[in-house]
Length: 173
Image (cartoon, rainbow, N blue to C red; front, side, top):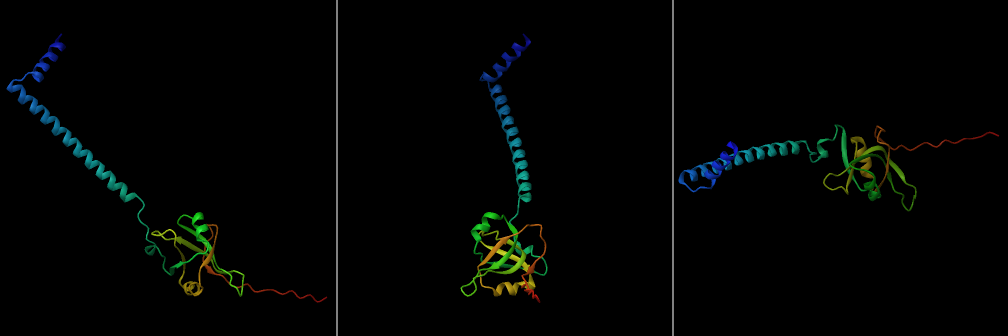
């Protein structure tokens, strides 16, 4: 019974049009709107903090020029089999560089062993190799495009390809 009486009193306060009840309704709804605004403001602040923290932890744009080790150069190259290489690698790979054969000499020639091939971050269709400064001029002297052979990434080191000496076997029979 007491519960029903309190509900009836509440209904009288809410639904009667006396001046005092109107002020109470206005104050109640004003307080309710104020609480909603405060809660919404704090939710917005929390979301802004979360978004700023996640953006600082997200992958930043990669700029290779700040990552070049001392004594090395990043040399942009044209690759003859670029479409195939794009399908094989993500950002970088260890490769051997070859110069294609010419009409005079149809054999290909190895220019560099185990160099790091990097994909350009702003244009993924372009590539560069990371090589020692001493190798840069030698590689730049070769006219491109180069042919690339992808190697095992665990192989270390960078070297210019050296001509192998041929060994003759002379039998004295």
